[in-house]
Image (cartoon, helix red, strand yellow):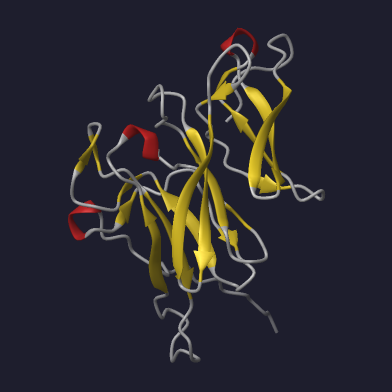
Length: 206
């Protein structure tokens, strides 16, 4: 007897795009499994049917959940909930093309490649604060570029064993070659620490 394992691949969700107030182009973000078992991710553009600095929408943060009861088919679609639609103001952030981190309370953390309260091309770090089924966005760090801070974070964020957030930037830091940074929470106030920015040993991390 010959046993074979057949793997099926079927989309669990098809994005509808900005013309339908949905996200589009989830390029590099990937998915994070939250404490509730849902998938969390980002789309580069979309969200609202308005232009955003030349893009079709400013991007979204979303959650995907399986059907609440056992589906009749393994191909049953999942349900998407958009947690936040980025707005066409530079200081809100745009192009959240990165992996998000989710804490035990369901708060979501991420970075945007662009958008800033001073210079559009630096980007920022944000938190989506969960309250029941709703989320409130707040900016917890605006990148300042070289020479003492990063800019343009393509990597997203991960939690370390110390409970702090870690990520990288593509630009900023020494010789504008990128940084490795840490976000530390102290009583609800976040502080960024640049841990590494030596341009002689690796540059521009995605």
